[in-house]
Length: 121
Image (cartoon, rainbow, N blue to C red; front, side, top):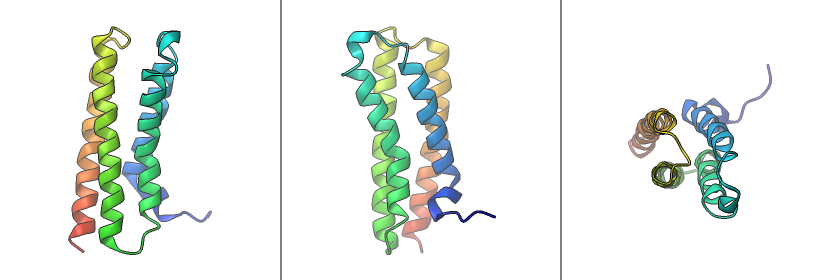
């Protein structure tokens, strides 16, 4: 079996990668004038979720790991806010927004559980 780094074993990391793929596909239909604004910002924020989880696993102390989990959570909230804006502007239909919000809520719960386990060890 192929070696796995510790972050590759995290379900929340896998789910955040899935969210990134969905966000990339959704934002490809945003208006061209949003390419360097909302599209770019949303894509950068969604990538930051899984990236901070990966970086956090390289830290030796649980407190440092929890810090990066908190950064992931902050990026997740940034994504949710930007999805609201995209929905408000009509770039994202209501059904797709609701679907994405459910994914955000699932990842939010997973990040909170991970942070709690990191802080209570």
